[in-house]
Image (tube, rainbow, N blue to C red; front, side, top):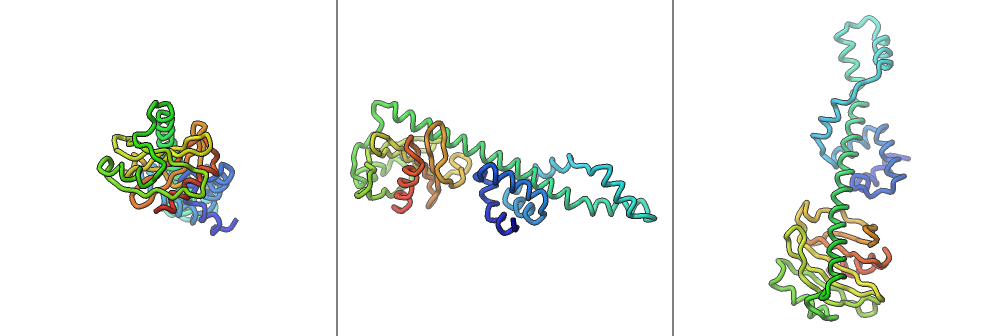
Length: 250
């Protein structure tokens, strides 16, 4: 596959969003292509991981002997420098691959942790005897209710002509930061929409299409300094439809 095609997938690979088969193929390609490996390094900037990984690499004895024989009568000092020059690209590729692998696993773990917290908040709301503090199907009633209760504002979509119904909302918290939780109904199912200020590690996950977490589907994105999460036990297509309505609301 040409490098141009691989480079289109580098960001998804670094974020841990490629299907396993494509991720394995890209990882193998990065071990053979110095340019693509360098592109990956620029995205992850894992200097410490690179430094640690560099201590693990040693060229094979067979390759060293082959290089030394090719040098013939050159001095031992010249041979040593030539060997380092020849080994450098392979060493760099290995370091880049290890660094990227470390970063991808870290991002996957962090994203899973944040999504699990969203699932816990959604479950707690469903189990509550009072799931919302403001009960209304009118977005012009629900949105103003949050004024003064959270340090930001947001827009809600017009639902006329859709099969979604706004139930109401409440104030919720993530890492001690206040945010809005909105409840929507689709048929007999309830969907939570969480909105928080985007605060780095506390809410940081890469934008993604719906993924499955604890039997729920969840989708997340950022806009205008806010982080949105949409989660429910409906299909991924339904989660995506409601997410698109929220995105269009601005």
